[in-house]
Image (cartoon, one colour):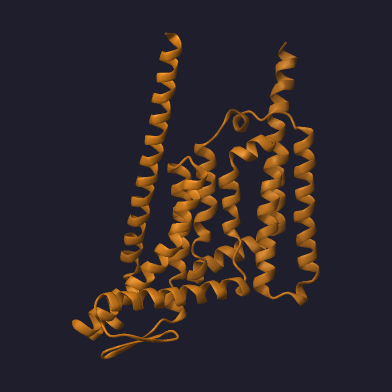
Length: 313
């Protein structure tokens, strides 16, 4: 009996040991891209959200631990095959990227390397803990793809769209406030002031942070998949409206109170105020959706209880 217990203990520890080895191998292979991504996040506000992704994913996995994570079952054949295939794809992708480094721009190389790293980690989970564990941790594992920095050919059009949306929403607010406004491209002309919605005014950092935060909150607070998707989708126009509100507020303060608002502290650091306004709107939407979910589940339980009583008669 003691021998059997020891064998069972070794079997249960084996997946954890293999997972640890695979993670160590990934750090050895992708240490350079990983540190480059963190450095980019620290120096470029367009990628600040990257710093949050790994700790948030780990916390979500920890909070949603199931018995399999604590005591993994022996390797399953189908999971081993799928995990092994994904490991090979990740390794092959990295080999191709590094062998063709001269033909790829640095931003594309970094994106593909980080994509390979995340794929390797997901493959390690499937191989060691099984497809069932992967399905239960689907959100935090897929959330790791936010660690992949957007290459310039993806990021630039996104920033351009945010600029255009911010300019349009600011123009709408000027019109709603009765302020004469004329828009020419990214320029907004109002009496005594011309506002340029520059790349910095796109608020790509706060927009990314708002979207990432909304995804986590929706995952934690809602159960319905379509409600989660709805809240996440609404976060995008809310972010654009928040940018427009900031432009409108600074322009109005500069023309009605003090021109110093154009270059002052409120312009440079006031973004957090408008981020909190947008976050409050997200919380309100989440509260409405969660209340609707609870009401629907309560109605279902009442109908089930009523049906049960009818059958008893």
